[in-house]
Image (tube, rainbow, N blue to C red):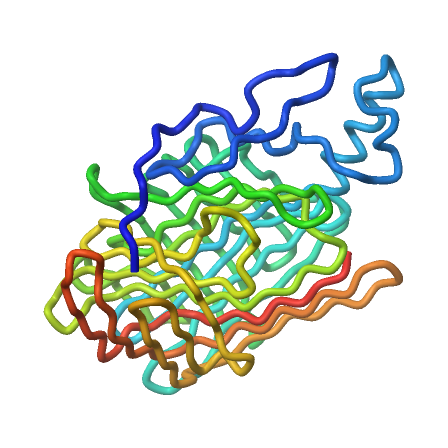
Length: 355
C-alpha cells in the first residue's frame, strides 16, 4: 500500500480547444473533485468523428458523441446497524437508469425499485459532483441527489416491487481535511474516464420502509459515493467493491477496488483511514466476488443479500449484479499501521454491458 502523490487539481479535465478540437484530457489523480470535469469535450473514435470541429456538421458530431456515446452516473450507499441502502441516477443518452434498494441486514430481506427510461426522460445529470443536482423521476421512483463536492443530500420516494413505501432523507458529510479521490484516465480504443469517489462519509437522516423508520446516526452510519463520466467501451466489464465502516480499533475506514484496472499510471483503487487516502496496487477481485486482495490488503466477504438488473435490446445488453456483503479484512498502510476489520457492510458488483 503506497501513499498517493498530492497533485494540485486543475479546474477542468480539458483546458482549451485547438483548431476547434479539444486537447487531450489531463491524466491524474487529485484529492478533491473537479468543478469542471468536461470529459465530454474529449475526442473519441466513432462513426462521425471525421466531422469533429467542422462548421455546421461538427455540431452534429458533437451532439452524437456527447448525447449518445457518453455515460454518466452517481451511485451512493449508506449503512447503519441493521440497514444498507443504495441508489443511483444515471444515463447513457439513449436510456437512463434509476434505482433504489434497501437490504435489512439481520434477515437479508430486500426492498427495491428499478427503472429504465428512454433517452433522458425524467432524468437530469449535473455537470459535476460539486454543484447542482442529479434527478431521476419515473413511475414509482424519484431520486434526487444534491451535490456540494464534499457533502451530499439525497431524497428518495419510491414504491417497492412489493408495493411498500420506501423513502429516504440522508445527509452525507466528510471532514474538510479528508482526501477525496478524483481520477481521469485513458481507456482502450482512445476512450476516457473521469470519476470522483469517496468511501468514508458520515451519514445522518432516516429511511422509511412501510411504517418502519430507521434512523442513521453519525457515529455509527457510513456512506460511499461514485460519480463517473466516461466514453465507455462498446463492451464494458468489471468487478467492483465499495465498503465503509470502522476498523476494530475504531477508525473510520472505506475501501474502493476495481478489477480489471485500466492501464494507467494512477487508478481509483484506494483505502481511506480516518479520511486519509492510501493508494492500492495490484488489485485482484475474485470472479465470484467473495474475496479480494491488493498489496497490503486481504479481504473476504459473506453474502447478506443480492439484487440484479438486466436489459436486452437489439444493440444493448446490460447485466448488473450487486451482492450486499459483510466484509472482513486486514491491511497495513505505508506508515506501518496495521488494522483489522471484523465487519463492514458494502457491495460487490459484477458488471457486464454491451452498448
